[in-house]
Length: 94
Image (cartoon, rainbow, N blue to C red; front, top):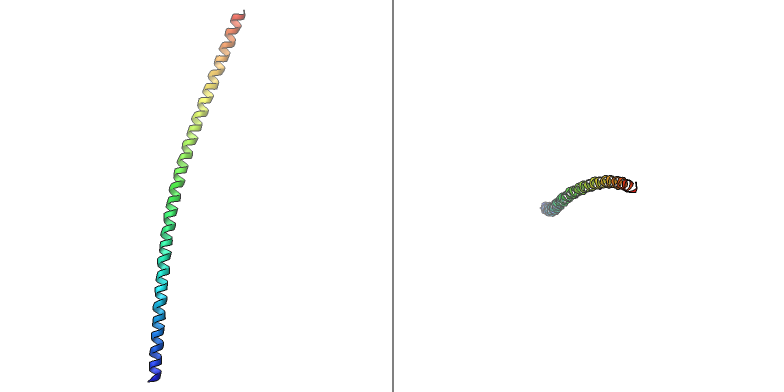
């Protein structure tokens, strides 16, 4: 009889330990789930930031290309004007 009571008590202790372990595992799983969700949120924010930065870079490149083209156009116009001025000076000096 005593042995049976001892076995029952041991089973109760094992059951309680198993419940505690299960509760600990559930808390760890919940914490891991929260961390995973936070990581997903951070990843999404980083991707949004990356896309925004890429868009800004694309616009900056486009603006640079437009500025370079305008500069080349102005340089060509300056050369034409310098040639015309030189021709006019040549006419005036003759």
